Amino acid sequence: MGGTEDERRRRASRAFPRLPAADEGPPPLEDLLAGVARGDERAYEAVYDQTSGWVLGVIRKVLRDPAQSEEVMQEVLLDVWRSAARFDPALGSGTSWVMTMAHRRAVDRVRSERSHASRELRSASAVIDYDDVIEAVQASLDRERVQHCLVSLTPLQRECVNLAYYGGYTYREVAELLGVPAGTVKTRMRDGLIRLRDCLGVE
Amino acid sequence: MASGDSELHTLVGAYVMDAVTEFERAAFSRHLTSCPECRAEIRELQEAAARLGTAAAVLPRSELKGQTIRAASRISQLPPATPAPGRTWRRLTALPRAALMAAAVLAASAAVLGVVTQHTMQQLDHSQRQNHMIAAVLNAPDVVILTAKVSTGGTATVMMSHSEHALVFTAHGLRALPAARSYELWLMGPHGDRPAGMLTAEAGGMAGPAVVSGLTPGDMIGLTIEPVAGSRQPTSAPIVLIGHGNN
Image 1 (cartoon, rainbow over the protein chains, first blue to last red):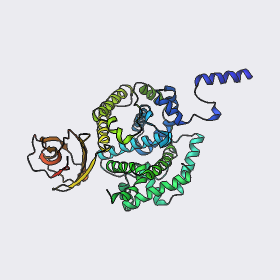
Image 2 (cartoon, rainbow over the protein chains, first blue to last red; image 1 turned 90 degrees about the horizontal axis):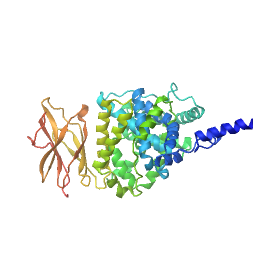
Image 3 (tube, each protein chain N blue to C red; image 1 turned 45 degrees about the horizontal axis):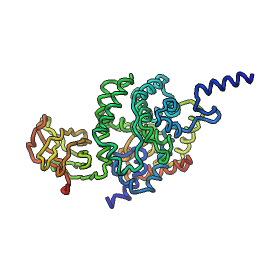
Image 4 (cartoon, chains in turn yellow, green; image 1 turned 180 degrees about the vertical axis):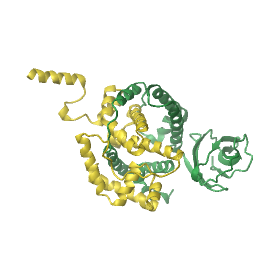
């Protein structure tokens, strides 16, 4: 019996020599990114596993189109490979670094689409859709937490954050959509995010 | 910019959520270099915004993993940024090199990524190169931002960097032109008038960003109305002329 357990452990450590045992959780993204910066393809694979769902998720929210979203997701992941040496943990977490790139790319893409198509403003979804989200325990815990915190915002703060982050609109477009002065939208975006930060307890 | 700084600071939330235009992003990034408190605030708010993103996670199709990893293995990696960005950024992102690098990376991913069509790649190639040039101008230590009224209607804004020998031109509220006429940009200065590209005004008279390279000392950027095919030399007086005298 002990033999099979040993055997399993040996096989697992051969498959993932750099990863700690499963109960210690995955290695921190920051460490993996440092590996990617050195050209470590195995670290890159682990980064892909850890982040591709997040990246595709945020892009899908902004872009909607599934095929284009996959394309942009791949661009972002290739950017992660290419520029991992530029990641500086002193400036923020690995998650924040990857998500900032993903969101910016999605927004760039959706804006160029919108300027090609008529500048028609579509309605952004009010809250997170539950249809196609990952059914993993950690992911659904995260989602519930964020959802809970979004509900703690004032309705205007929530609308501003939703339209900007998930809709990809500029604060001026949001002001136009909501019929509220642009200055008000700017401050609601800021204090909405501050409240979200406090509620989520991120540093 | 004196009156603009506290005004700029309220942009923190919009900036973190990419709810700003390219110009506002550039102006705000410049503001950040002199505002350590803003950088700390941005860092925290970026972490919060990232959670909005990760909460929307979906499972990618499994084929994408192999494709992406194979594509990455053929793309060369960038060296680390050096620690004094203000001083070294310009050298790191010298225009031709950045453009070449972008082109090389795109060529590599085009060869490998089955999902990306030829047409999309060409668009990306162009827009990515343009983005690199815009980034180089906007982040140059000597960039100046100048705005002027267009005599026939609208406003033009130029971000100009002599160290990058380039500028970025945008306009809004430009008058719609008859089908046979078009807007054309010119570099106008001691070296004569050189055509700097046609400018298409879209809905609402929005135009640009147009990247103009080959800027030499003393040059200004001018806009004229020309026959739709463009001209070799301006055939009418500029409806706006922007530059700064001391260079």
